[in-house]
Image 1 (cartoon, one colour):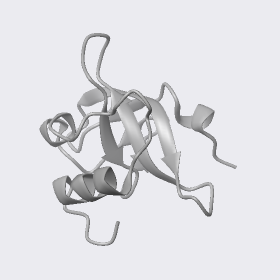
Image 2 (tube, helix red, strand yellow; image 1 turned 90 degrees about the horizontal axis):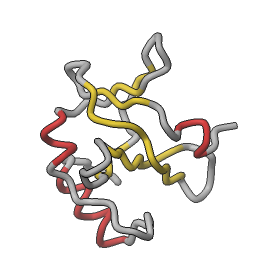
Image 3 (cartoon, rainbow, N blue to C red; image 1 turned 60 degrees about the horizontal axis):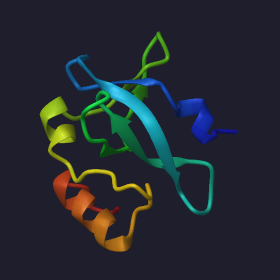
Length: 102
């Protein structure tokens, strides 16, 4: 069973294998334990950003490789203090990441 603690602190890499940051929170599908969104913290003085869990792969080192460039992740909507995603925020994120059925 997947939990947020299973992902928290895991290194996130972009599609080229460059480090984007670490997982700081996870949003799960409401009807399962499948993660749908990760908040990625790039560093102490930088804002966290959302990245979709769809299409991710785990590396041999148990890192998360996402199918996006680091620029795309860093230009995505920022994570607010509540770490909650409203329908409006999900729609903005789906548009930013060109997700068709999210």
